[in-house]
Length: 125
View (cartoon, rainbow, N blue to C red):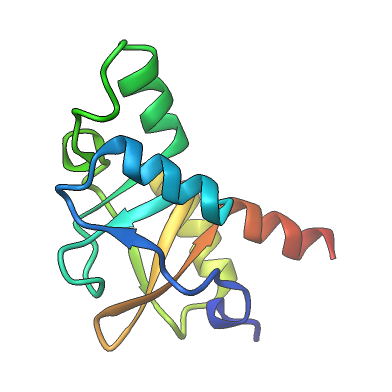
């Protein structure tokens, strides 16, 4: 059985809730990622901020990304799965919850993230 540990993206790149959207966008660009977790301690997710959040809630709303904190625009609902979860189960969870990203945890701490793109790459072979 293929598990999420085989396909998750790691390491987790996260920012603190008080980070500005501009700083978060700079980090996302540097690492070529479309989202990042928001965490106080780097172990537990408080939320997730995505390119879509920045586009809709900052750029389209004409907000200053240097003045707005990620905690103000992040999605607070973060779905987590244990590292032993199968990719089939994760795809079901994504579909049911209409989510594109799921945080992978081990012993309660976040260790990776699996995205809809990861699942598509797996299916493509």
